[in-house]
Length: 479
Image (tube, rainbow, N blue to C red):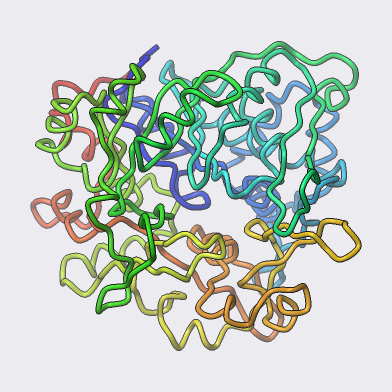
């Protein structure tokens, strides 16, 4: 087993870093990472498409609790696939006490993705979660651990509780996690719980404890996590503001450039000496997809780098092939740009948008879409007047958000990332006469340079091409 890979493949989007990509990277000796976001939805929708290729069926057959797998299969599988113009079945939204069927789907979705990524080789596989998406975290972790995941990576927040939760899940013990609730009074706490014993019907297996890597942007956060987490932090991914997806906001008062992007300054440059002094391995992320930058990172004390954008548009990526071709064509002719949008994400974090026609970064497409929140993964929890916990999303219909105590100003420019990212991987919802949900694309600033992987007039490239470019052909060996 590779304990400290030089290359971590980023866990991007909803299914962009799917099992096929992670498997390809892991089979070549580096750390392949699946995205852990919305895996319950992606499993349900793949089953409704008839499980093309039979991959889901193969993984579900390996699930250690066949009666649960059978219930999920019977609930969602459509033989031959649903009609193209028929919408996917809606799932219940996650809550403090989710229905058992949703918990089963969540556990199984994470198991399936990791199991497929690990199938048939001895490489290591990781899974990436967002701390901001708290409600599905516990059953998601359990499902990934049931499949033998080797690494858990988490960013977009301060995941102090996660290492201890992983410890307890590995022992088969019940776990709980405190939920951030806006407006909670002093002394008020809300939690989600997951009991492996109850889920497994009386006996919970002892599981391998995966390593935990926190995705951070500062030495201060690294120190906090290393010293004050509930369990062991095994390392860090130090991510700069040029990386794709969510970025940490600039320190201090938010200032925008003439283009409308957040301005990052010297205070936002992580102190690598302080991070190295903690004695834990770390990797650097954000425009490191170049062999010289890999060497630079290692010279600075890192074990290697995390690379996302270069993998996001390779042949094994989960992004729709037509979208990949469009982006690569746009890179070649210079028409594709990346914009760090300070308001797009419902999380409040800056979010990298690939500006491309036909996507939600295109103003006419954004304006034409009717706002709907039917997935709810990026909702915020808040204290209602009666003391109970409610949920609202800045990307939901404006009137609904305001009725729940939000402000109209808080909805301006917000994008439904849940629906948009599912559309990017070919799983877009259909809303009656309004048609399909449009996609949303994210990538790091390094997107403009990925044509380097297309020599000799080639129209596409694969994960091996990326690794051989970064490490040299002699260093890329199958495991």
